[in-house]
Length: 158
Image (cartoon, rainbow, N blue to C red; front, side, top):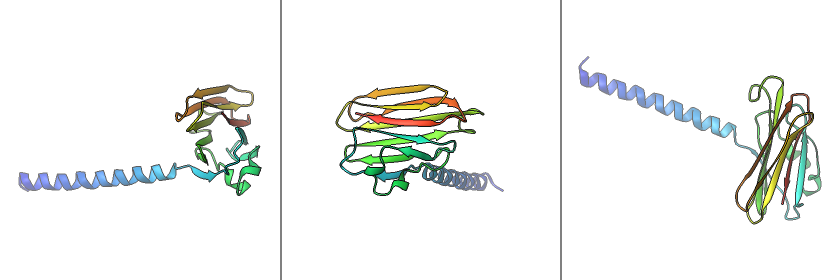
């Protein structure tokens, strides 16, 4: 095979591999997209969810604000739930192994209010609690870690 044919074959192979990697990246990105739920305009100034060992919501103060109270079910570890408000967005989720150390759980609460100073809090029972604050239109990112059998909590406030 001549040098020019080797170069062409190499470029075709590299192009195919690049396309395959791009497709896998897009599929992975789509798999990590949050479940999105919209809240009515009567949104309370603060909200919370309690999540079980699998990251599923077991209690919240937001049921009255939801079109469908099952819509805030955050699924399983590694899945993110996003709640869109008229003037903000709240994303909360729980990480467990393999996304957190073995025997540990990490709770996340990320909130952005487009108009007001705000905060988000994450906590794990028998573990740590963290509150983050942010100015309008900037996310506050809170993350807390605790034992895997601890209940995870996420809060937002403005």
